[in-house]
Length: 86
Picture 1: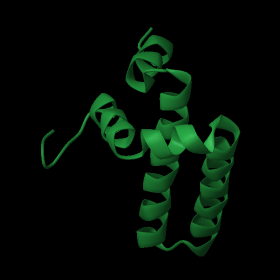
Picture 2: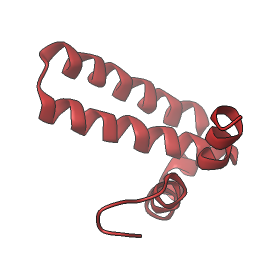
Picture 3: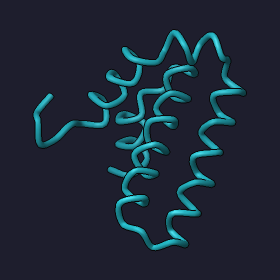
Picture 4: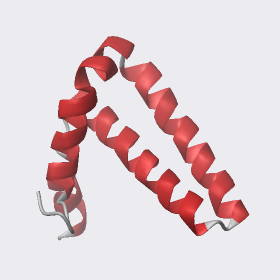
């Protein structure tokens, strides 16, 4: 993983290494609920127009999305390419 850039796959692997056991123990529905909570926090950050908060919440939303993907066995980079590189 480069210091200045990271692929989606690398980010997903990082989240898997750090959080998969905890996410698995929590379960899919509870992990998805955390994802939705972070989306709400992103909405609040967007309304505040605070750039630092927006960046932080976007990172959180991505991390929780990757956690959900890990739990259901979806390679996010592959799915994104399949959908958008037609």
